[in-house]
Image 1 (cartoon, protein in one colour):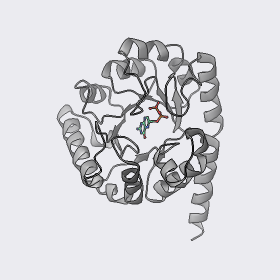
Image 2 (cartoon, helix red, strand yellow):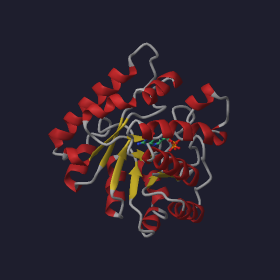
Image 3 (cartoon, protein in one colour):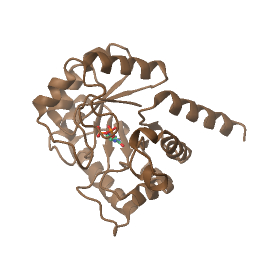
Length: 254
Ligand code: HH2
């Protein structure tokens, strides 16, 4: 899954793809590099320094870009926590809903994805990190709540992808714990998505600015794939695809 941020303030690529032409060129490039899904976001979710924006603003960023990306022919997912924005994106060709609040923030989200019968990414999140909690237990309890909400709204379990939300409401150490223990989340019997790309935990193990975290991102993504993650969300598509393909090819020689 290639990341396309139409935002001025995303933590690693804010402002790079706010012009529709550069966004479209980036989408094109990620498809050529091997992305199977393009995830479009128009509101930054970074914990510090991002501005919450109204749905109108999010839509005005998406309007000139999303339908054009859809026309490239690759499945598009919409990264938004607002049901109104997801509804608009689905109307304009997006085919996956990516909710960084796991159906637990906007009360209209579960009903929407049930009605449209689209796959939904249910991501774990918390308002703030708490180093004292057992993060794996917290994630499991959160997923159980999300699955309950989904079931009550009539979302088919076959449409749900779970994502532990690397870097969201977690200390860097907890993000690493999640990657180290990802296999435990297989017990839900649902496909897993992991997005570690350029995130801050990398700089704890290896001090670096977001743009310099490609090696760390790849290390984390290979570990996630080995533990069974089926979808990897990344900014640097060519390098990530190559790393995953080589790791898979080596795996086949066992
Ligand atoms: N991470 C980010 C945004 N959306 N969605 C899912 N499902 N999983 C993730 O790990 C995830 C996500 C944060 O990365 P980015 O989009 O680059 O940053 P920003 O939120 O600042 O735009």
